[in-house]
Image 1 (tube, rainbow, N blue to C red):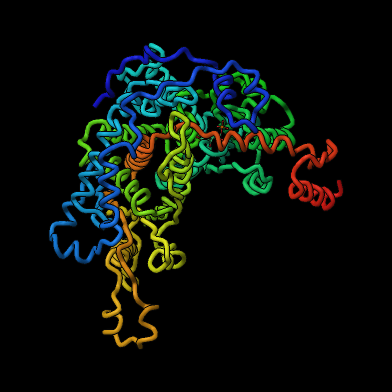
Image 2 (image 1 turned 180 degrees about the vertical axis):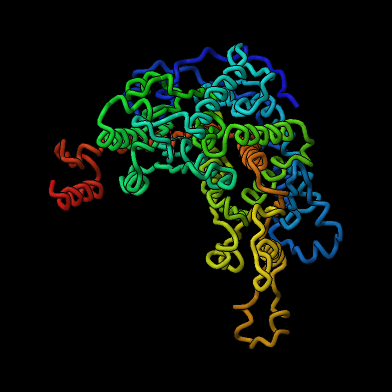
Length: 595
Ligand code: G6Q
């Protein structure tokens, strides 16, 4: 289905320049000077329908239900309602979501859906798809959904249809990716490109790495992709130590093209390449850029003909399907990349049109919110039973925690409720032999998203050992069962366990899980899964009434270190201008480094 025709955000306040908008709302310590210098834009108006959750009837109802939820016994709940497993399950786009093993009942779900209505989430969703500037602190539209809109769709920003721009960049990416994959694009000495090194960090790294790992089976194995992100030089060293610069292509990925980690790594890469390739002309064949900042790209020395752009309405952590996915496209090829985008779009349409009770992002969001705000769960474990998804948790960590790790509401007043939980996880079954102990028997409940695919990509196994995939799936299902139903002292005693050991071998159960059983991993399915989580984050942020699309905490980090660098490198005398702890650490470092 085509994306909706949308209207331009006609009533939006005039845009201030990004720089001044940034400076004006930045944390005081981070950029006091620029904040002072800027003309502060007027505070944005929060739409009246954006009601604070604790002002709703549904919130009060949920608060009353929480007590029952905390003491709920899933054994009894399943025994009482034989249809519970199917009643609290839904399926769309090849994703079967079973949320029945959560501490919910029909009344809870009714109240959660009422909360959606009272908090204006559907109006907010409409505003996002319409290109309104819902990122209020930066006065920007939030249109990652436009990155995967089909060609004929119309989505306007400031009265201009942006979909043709998206497809123009996609077309350029495709021609470039094809040239590299086919060997038409050659390095400076005429050799084929064997390794693509993406240099980027945060949103310009985590998505591409996760997707490359997830879709390795769909990738051109003759070209390897590597990812350098950390300012720690060991990252650059390890990722390049065995490479031939003549066969290496660097993709410098940075929305702003000013991020110190990426720019330092890119300068190091250029020096590394030119040391062997000798001529500055080699840069054109070995460096391309993905950025919104053409001026800085040109300053770095990359021909802007080799730059792939995107736009300020794409947040870093929502950008893996923009040109930031260039390394992904080189790896899996343009056709598979289109499939990935189609998968994202499938989920956008599902999110936009499916009734809330059958809407996967709504369901994941509401269950998560119930666990966080009413049952007091502080973390969520994402546990994919799929080795290809081994970077999924790291990716979602940024998506969720950077988006909703906020403590003030859209109007700047403190949140009177909890927001983003800690997201973490590792693939199953590895995690079972490590931290699942705490999930089963620890003092803090940890809700889990258990994710598995029905079909393996490779049917591996032997007659003696059995089929790996069946064993894998047996594990995920067994874990969900054990977490929900536990093992009572009576059951432990009945096994002949001595009395003193019974408490140690008892499992309390009632540990909430969602199980997502998915048909098969493919580029399209990965797109659906990622968009599912993107929209889950949207719904939660919408109810929590925070801006899910800014990241002042990250911006702070970007400026803080810069002040200390000269003091460490010895180019500036240590001013001892910090607190006594930081001063002493700087002095120790300088002494050890002989500075
Ligand atoms: C993402 C964040 C952050 C950002 C990085 C890299 O939403 O803003 O993770 O992606 O800091 O920024 P650049 O792409 O500008 O280098």
